[in-house]
Length: 483
Image (cartoon, rainbow, N blue to C red; front, side, top):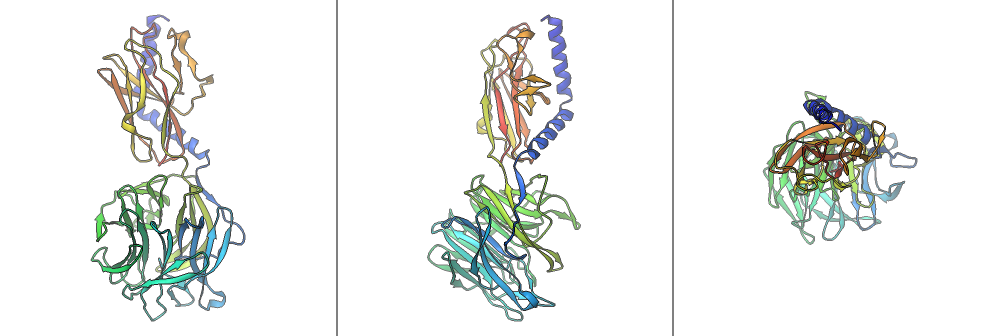
């Protein structure tokens, strides 16, 4: 190939890099399409013979028995009280496991569930499934009561929180401190702590107490900081073993976090809830929590807007299960849902080098993730290319395919362009400049909220003495967006 052709090729690539912002949008669009075509996201698993519509219920995963457990109640026919039940979900069907303790109800014109009247937690050391219930009745306020599940019946094991009005309950286990913490979000604010042997009541001054009707409470263990996280009304708090520390959330954030579930595989909290500003929804219901950072997740299909729903993570099937909830007018639900949804967050974030580069003036360029960086949603993913010429420009090629580009199969042999031994290993949807500092160049990209998407990378350093084309290529890299 003539040097004039080489110069023309260089000019073309530099023109592409000058359009990097626009083309990066094209790459993101391509990733969205790729993610939408995959199996990740919300799937409606509602079937026959499932639980009746309900709100204010609770869910968890029973590690001993290997199913998702749900406890809740719904209005009895004719408006005569409520029916409280225990159900399990195995990924295919719901099974009625029997009755459950009744929680607080209010009957202005029929029975309505209050927010968070049930809460479930699993004590990590003993794998005990524990149920907290607001045991108040109309006109009579009673303390929350804790029960233990043996696979067949619920047995009361603790009580002691101050009787309150319309308690909002949160329940979660901190395995690092061997504490399962029950939070009462009404007046006064209290917690009850279980260490596997004894229960103790601890008054707390924060979060502040809430008035009649309570607030939606979401609680789960946050593996990123090793603490229990509590969210309510747009605020988040962390439990340090003795009290609550308020955290500041970046906006937008879920103002009405209906449900939390700890994803043990991804070491994050998966949250379901809407972000609001002036009563207007700002984002979808799927969020990722970690260290007081809330990242919205984009999916083509999502459950309808609702509150006082419940969600649990199934570690065996690696899905989050959500059931039911209510649509509200003031504090009272005017509609309840009885649908079952599963959220597949896709594979874990990963980066895998593939193929080989071609020799340049300082050896074969090598590309790898920088410092163990991974393409996690909402985080900055960084790579490093080494063995480049001491000086001179370098580019990062980004694509959505490693099998074809513009009708040409990949890898494409560039020998015809006078670059023997060099293979293009990715399609080129975007070209980004890299800064070469003494033969090493880095590149970074903030990962969009599209778990399951895949993109491909290849570093291209300009090396005038390497071959007549004046450039070389590194190995390729396959990046899988994950959490």
